[in-house]
Amino acid sequence: MYKVLLVDDEGIVLDSLKFIINKNFGESCEIRTAKTGRQAIEIAQEFVPDISFMDIQMPGIKGIDAIREIRTFNKKCQFIIMSAYDKFTFAQEAINLGVIEYLTKPANREKIVAALEKAMAVIDQERSSRSQNLLIREKLEAVVPIIENGFINLILFQDDPAPSLNRYRDLLNIHTDYGWIMVLEFGEDGENGNLENPVGTTVQLQNHHLAFREIIKEFMPTCIIGPIMAGTVALFIPHESQDLPYEERISIIENTRNMIRKLRKQIDMHFRAGIGNVWSITEQSKSYEESKKSLRIDKSSVVHLRDIKMELEYERDYPDDLERYLFSCLIRGETENVIRASNQFFDWMIENYPDYVQCIRIKILEFVMTAEKEVFLKGGIPYGFLYRKDYLDNVLACQTPEEQRRWFVSKMTEACRNINDVKEQKETTIIGKAQQYIIQNFSKELSLEEVSKYVDISPYYFSKLFKEETDQTFVEYLTGLRVEKAKEMLISPAASIKEVCMAVGYSDPNYFSRIFKKVTGKTPTEYRDHI
Image 1 (cartoon, rainbow, N blue to C red):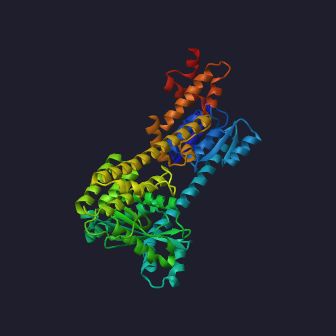
Image 2 (cartoon, rainbow, N blue to C red):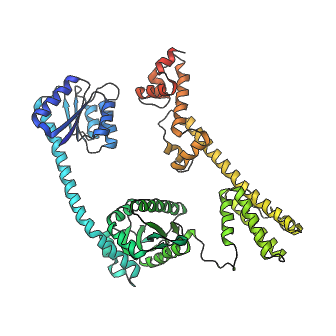
């Protein structure tokens, strides 16, 4: 079966083509028709044709432009141009777009049939090649897991992996000398973030092994997946160098989180991931140990070794959880929680060490200096050598516990509020900068991705922030800006509707008219008539 799209603004041409195709190819062709370039594009998106007969000169979007647009989402379609214009420039453009045949109207039945057979032959060849490739791929899919298991065993558990390493690298297309290990831990959710029943869930995961591999490969296409072993699976991810920049590490963690979420959704069990540092291929056992260590130290769903502090020995009964909570609230700008946690920590010091006034003073100074360092790192306050020269005298001047408490809590609160100020200023600056860029460039083809790149934040976060700050989506804001500018231009009768359309960033007058009416309730022509 071949899907054929016929595009011509003359109904008689469409009827003739349908007749010739049905008579010569019968039910082997499913046919759709369009009379304009825009209609052709819209039908092509839904119909996904194998072959298209395309006229060049049509109202609105021309045939060449329609082909160019369809090519963006359908690379396989075979185009046959039919035109009354036998011009070299048209033919040259057609060749550049990969048009298989150029027929000059009126084309007789034999030429149409020959062109269609030529296109069908190309499609048949591609389908045959695709079928062969799929067959080869299916055979490889059965062998690849065995090779990958052998590679993981070699680099993690063999004392000298070098003798067999190059053979595995050739088979698995590994062309780099570095990489890192991720250990996926799976099981049933237990107490204190631990995963339980490794034996039972190992059997369960074996039953979902294909889906498990597909999800991992979706998020990490180059990774090598090891065998399932007592509640864990080791992955090797090749890397170009031994350096891992901060931005790339954050991207890896976020990608892994997304992978974990999908694994949990598709396979009914819990997953966690520990990530080690980048090492040479022959030293991957070190990255393996680091990834396992990450899972032992931290109970988060995704843990990178470089994100966690190594085990620290606190004194017995020291409220380290409260300390971590206090500073995490500070960094998030949660003022009320900072006030509450600061008071709780001070209560602990007074209750347990009421006679150690100097130690209490030292501790509140330590906390305040640490908090202000966090604010400084976020750009909230200066951090000069002499800027806190009075702090020690101020603390020593606090004679009673309540005076010490007031100074401590007030400084921690001030630091938290400074962090909030930085956040607000940053968000206002980002959206203001974005709005200025949109105002300067609204007449061009403008996307959310382009603007978010300009202000140097991710499209997802920019979209969320823009909505929060302006109470409009990016598209709503841009559309409103363009429509207001169009209103101004429509006041002058000198500008045609098409000129106004182009000036405010739209390439298609029909689409512009629909948008304008959606916003104002009138078409551009109606709006101008009522001015």
